[in-house]
Amino acid sequence: KIITLLALLTIQLGLSQIALTSYGAPVADGSILAKNQIGYPAAEILFRVRNNGTTTTNVWIECENLVNNTGSNFQLCFGEECLPEVAEGIIYPTTGSVTLAPNASNGNFDHFLNDNSGSGTYPLDFVFRFFQTNQSTQGGTEFGNSIMVTYRYDPNLTVDEVSQLEASGVIVKS
Image 1: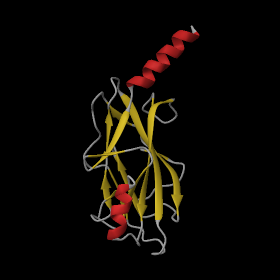
Image 2: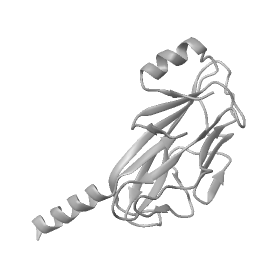
Image 3: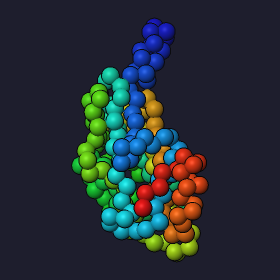
Image 4: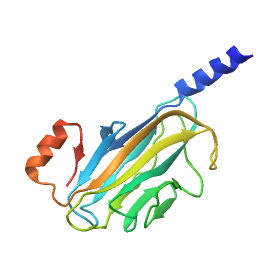
């Protein structure tokens, strides 16, 4: 029975894999998406989550960490929810997961948008983790892969630094 359970768990883990893109470009786990402006449209980063698995999956975003900010004036739109701020440790959407069938992607309007200038000196980091669970309400068992991504507002980001960041795997949109 234990071997059967482990085999079923392994199959489930292998079948449900999510991928993240921004403006059509793949976003790898641990990526930093950097902006040097605030407000719409300059600070908006669109994203899409795709279910590359063979089974339906429920996708969530958890705000893992906020650096040099409180999460205010930061818009997160995902699924049916569009929120004007985020809070560390909270899982979104709060009303229920984004459920994706095999080979399906979320909507075209899901995005991050920063309107917080902070002190104007130090970068602001908003760290999120995309993950999957076995149910469409919060509290389900996690499975499959997760993807960690940081939205960074850096008021001091210059054109010269963009090339250096892109060479390191950081996606910069301005």
